[in-house]
Amino acid sequence: MSEIDLESITIEIEEQLARKAYPADFPDLPPVPTGRYNSPAFAELERREIWGKTWLLACLADELAEPGAYVLFERCGVSVIVSRGRDDVIRAFHNVCRHRASAIVQEPKGKAMRFVCPYHSWSYGLDGALLSVPEKHNFNCLVKAERGLVPVRCETWRGMIFINLDPNARPLAESLAPLAAQTAGFPLEDLIVYDRYSIEIDCNWKLALHNFLEGYHTTTVHPNTLAPYLLPRSFTVSLLDHGHARIAVRKSKQASLYSTDNGASDSVSDVFKQYAISIGCFPNNFFALDPNGFAIQSFWPVSETKSVMDIHVVGPKSAPSSPEYWSEMRKVMDCIAAEDLRLFQGIQNGVQSGAAPDIMMGFQERTPYWLEEEIDRRIGLDRVPAGMAIQQVLQSQSVS
Ligand code: FES
Ligand SMILES: [Fe+2]
Image 1: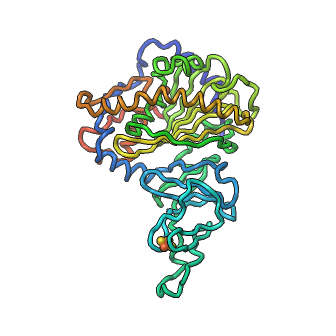
Image 2 (image 1 turned 135 degrees about the horizontal axis):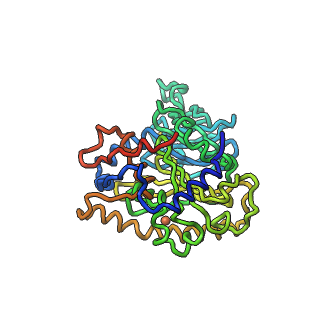
């Protein structure tokens, strides 16, 4: 797969820096109805058509390095065990015992060569098979072969492990195909997970994600943290098929936001050193491919008005590995995130106030607009409740 072309991205960014007017060939972006951010009916459509049918990032391969390693995915109202089998195959199962439906695994991650239910000790193999039932003679019609754990679709893309609650979903590789060229030259397969944590957010998941998909707020919100490292006005975007996006911003000084050690990583192509390349991976993931480490951020709904952001702090093998480096990086990331987070409750209050029937997105906010368009396409344009639909204007601008 060919990589992002350094020369063409340089031209794109020069043109963006020189631009003084709204691009003549770009459509207007109509206002976005705020009902999308507080309506139970809209959230229910998302639950069914987005969370129930889309590939969802569960964990990274590094978290399941050995047979028996497991991670519990507990978002969107489901509990799913993702684990590496004795045969090295990564599988996912609903974390629901086939006896009387107890949750089986309770720790967020761990290692087990079999899963034993804490209620009556039925046990299951890493392949989901029901292995043992205490006092089995008391179950006259139990066929063990028919009562294995219920599987969930689970596929891996470049070291990132996704699940899909829809047995009929198209393959993960097809869904993420538009990201292949945009991430080629960055060793995603080798990412090491240095930290994993979650942050509760006081707004709808889409409002939180919007913030990370645009650079318009950088100068105002991050004047001393992000703004000195990036040229916010150089922000360019490729809108990609299936709701994904690739963002490129010129770096002002060094190759990494977190380290002045520009010699890091021969394994990373130059384009990622020269430019801050970020990926919006539909529906809810965002990451900036920094050669010296970065955060993979995933936004999940908790209710119409609350969400949670899961963060994987990762780095290529060639990035610095000392614990001090990663704890320093966490401090920088927490500081930048805090600058964003303090605004979210106020945004949610605003969209619920009745004073803002809609919000506006400009040309440099076309990435969140693209996200919203794709959400409606997935829900089905004829199913979006009246007054909540976003106008479909960007499809002619996307590249596959
Ligand atoms: S509910 Fe799991 S063994 Fe009874
Ligand atoms: Fe921000």
